[in-house]
Image 1 (spheres, rainbow, N blue to C red):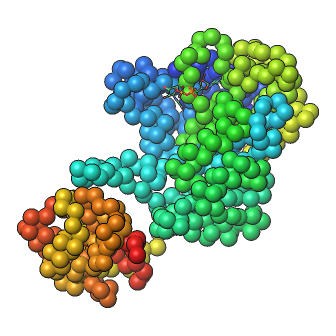
Image 2 (image 1 turned 135 degrees about the horizontal axis):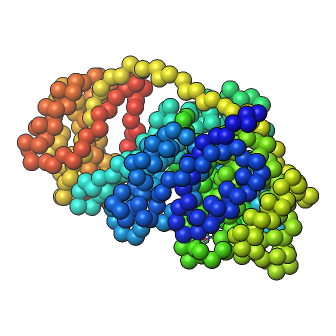
Image 3 (image 1 turned 90 degrees about the horizontal axis):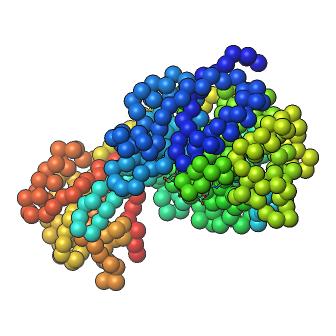
Length: 480
Ligand code: NAD
């Protein structure tokens, strides 16, 4: 074990941030954390100075050098023009895995789920969070959902490696691949492929709707859960909340180089400066940090002393309950109580055991497929609501092998043979391809677009239709 101090970047944040950070650092340093702190300023003041992501250019230099960030919550100022600091840090520094242990501490913290020990591993960079949104017509707005093979492989491999390193038995994947067969379908497929490399770990897949219901109802049946970004964003809060308090959960954001550790809650401005806030979420984030920097021994001392403090009924206001709790304390006194118990282990709750085993996540190289252009989806802003009229007109436009095969409105087929009951907006997807899948050229696509434009239609976007190794790389329209 290295005695050398590890440089870490620390941000005290806003609201209750400074108090809980001070308490957290005091506890981990008393437990023997071998760290060298570099403090950066982030948050409200920096936003209001005109830095749109709440962080100054110099702070990035510290983060890139230390590669470890312990971050207190910040306040995002009200009003437009401010970008999420968290999303910026995650994306700029490639923090692809969000790891959130959600544990209930029954009977010391009130919960409907006394047996719960779930780790949510959320993909952090892809999915609907690319921020690529457009207004396309009077009525229609779009947000692009991007899922990549390397992105899926990295997070799924991370989940299995995590399960192996922490002695977990099962990894569950949630997707909605019965609807999003290509994007969520890829996540599921990669889960099956990578999972096969971990025969000792049980694997299961749930459709996210019923899976989420099951997680909220019977969290005890889950162990590690790996999810795409949006479902993970929602479910990790649900999971933390049902343990009894969001104030107790910490989270890690891990990348290949840099990692960030934090509490999951915000800056609770109404509680700021009153020595009231519970520092536990940030403390458990710091525990994850200590494991990450190879100080599992210190992480164990901290978390076991913290568990013992909870068990003894020494509680901050947010988890204080007459009958269960013994003493209501403030932030500072809570930290003192944990420090007094360093070296002790819980008597009723399960003590934690961490190992310094680190894992490297490798991603298979991309194998280029044989890609063949076979058509194009042309999206029109067309105000007339008559799909038959549109179909009859567009039928006359051809280029190469491509001809009109289908028109959909919001994904539902309305031509040929649409139903009058189908509600139509002003946004029409018109599919041109050869009926027997013969290839086309992009020049032909451009010719087609030119003819359609010259006929007075407004093209708002196109999507090329490709076969990859002979397999369609696009979805069919929904409908009868
Ligand atoms: P919040 O998490 O700050 O507070 C929600 C509720 O939980 C409040 O009643 C609060 O008093 C309580 N609470 C939160 N943490 C607590 C703790 N440690 N101890 C005791 N009680 C605690 O959420 P909010 O009120 O929606 O947001 C406040 C600010 O925090 C906003 O500006 C928001 O943008 C920001 N925020 C920041 C982060 C972050 O930095 N990671 C995350 C979420 C929200």
